[in-house]
Length: 105
Image (cartoon, rainbow, N blue to C red):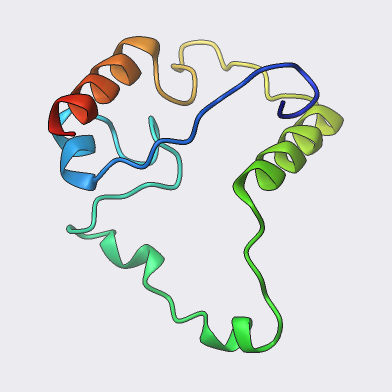
């Protein structure tokens, strides 16, 4: 259970080629994700060795999601902006992506 709402989500790792083939829009439909090639591909290539050496540790995904959700609730979830599509992936795109992943499986 994440965020105390009784919801359940399963994290599914999907290779970049499948994500691109399914027509997922980088960054907007799949936040923080960019294809491994192209003009923005180097965004996640920063050398974090010094941060790790100084004690930075990655937390478990479930803990990160739960804490992020709690923070969003404290701040008040952003209200949709009129005329602008919602954030994240719509159900049709998610279904198409998961089907492509299963087919590639």
